[in-house]
Length: 401
Image (tube, rainbow, N blue to C red; front, side, top):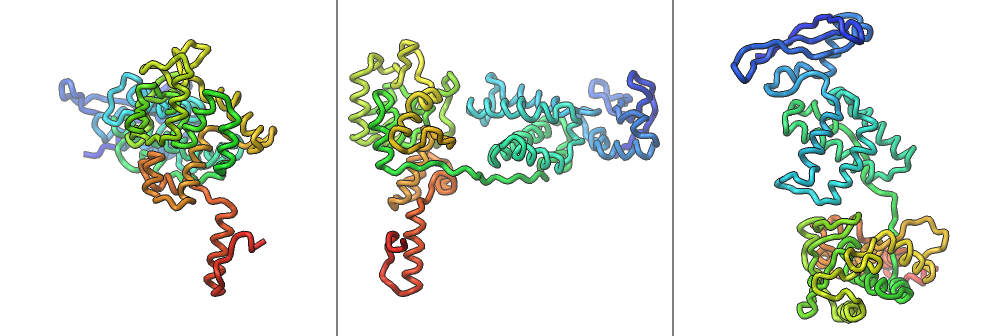
């Protein structure tokens, strides 16, 4: 039976306060007992009608009529605290266990963005349009890219969905404002793509082991965290395979990003020669040693990705003429992954093969994010179209100049 409750004024520390009083059935003995939920100060809601309007806005009726749901003004920080404890704890046993890097990202978003802005707000009183305006302000004032804003939106949505699953808030559509929040997802970022000759100049401009590490990333599409997570026992020279069993990121060992990411990677004989050469040079060549072990730490840990970029990869790109010294564009090992995907697609490699090489779970990721057309590709394609329209022999890209 639906109950409405009744409004009463009570004198409290902050002043006269509207309180919604209602009855619930106590589970321990089945008795009906009175509960209260604070609505707001009489100073802010001068009439009973305005207080009832606030009850509706906070959806307190939905709470008191849903068995087992906590009542009162549940703050958004209460929801995030429960989410952090039950979803992002290292000891959490979950059917869909998140990767450690994903959990780190979620914690960062909650602590840096969600808590400061929404923590003290009543969870059910946050409106979709004000969330949209906030996300737009993050892009405008803090320079966040669309995908980053969308990731923040998705984490906030996960918090609400988690809270509904555990019965912290009602399990209806209106109790999750994120269902109505719109956010652009397309990125303005254009990855710097290397041509094979540029990749060659980059690789040859490095000393060992950075040379082999860079060639490994460029030729296989392995993420830098996956490269650094390799041990020599993961390199199958006889089977021409590299097994991705762990990652090294933020100074700790993690699991592969996804089931698809854990798939073995083929190793061509040309790459195998470089890998074998480095194994013969390094003092850390035992099966359980890191392939790219830190000399400073006497092989106990792998090298650090961002330091490799700053100290070796980016300076080599400047020396090779790929980047200007003061070029502000992002450049790192991930550019090599994008470059490999683009080269393979341009070479008419079957897209499913490209997907398997990059170990993407969805081919849409391969085509939509990791492949990039070059200016000459677009010019040549336009020439083909014009030739067909004008019934002319195929127009070469150079003839358009």
